[in-house]
Length: 287
Image 1 (cartoon, rainbow, N blue to C red):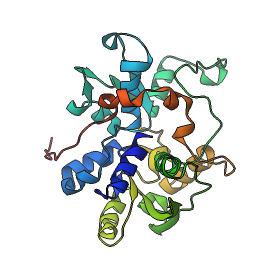
Image 2 (cartoon, rainbow, N blue to C red):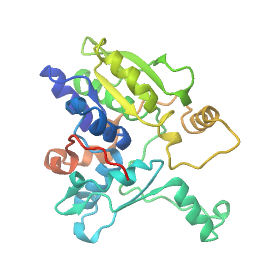
Image 3 (cartoon, rainbow, N blue to C red):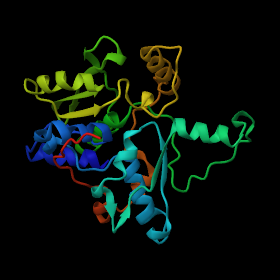
Image 4 (tube, rainbow, N blue to C red):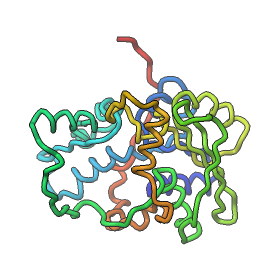
């Protein structure tokens, strides 16, 4: 939601575009190291996991922040680096205290001798999570849909992406889509896989993009570095199977943060110091 507001402000003021989403910590680190001249394009909104940690620790849990420890479980190994950033410390407390990958959690379950298949289901505590039906689309879809809500006061009906670079996901890919919002055509793109970054920056000098999602892992987060290793399938096959298992449901509505009850309840205007961060040129050091 905040990333959509970031874009709308830039768009109305004709400021630096395209807007790069800040959801992938590996991509933001890449820009700091190797493309610092593009950092002005990067949204200052914290990545989802870190933003969630900051809001939980300093607002939602209603406890003394120093007594709260936030541990994330996800597909990303770069998140381990991300949570150590000096820029992601609020009131001298880290926004996230520890990060586990899916693979690490699986190993811990095995080490404890837990038979996962025999665990009895428990009713989820939805105090800090929104109850909603299944949706489709990731951060880019959610952002552009929120932009539509802010400018047109209605959600998008659909988004159709066309692959313009990369034959298969495992080699890196660029997908583009044009959406009509506020009577204007907006060009958005998702760039997956570091190998596709060079191609994208060449295209960026020739095309007028509006919002771009940069993701370092080919196929996106479903094949992040912290996901289980699969030895008997190609990366392309793994991507396809995980997308089929996790991302199906063509009849589901597009992801839309404006319909999230938790987001609606937050006094975001009062929480800006917890929502935004900063990025700067970094030096590459070996070892």
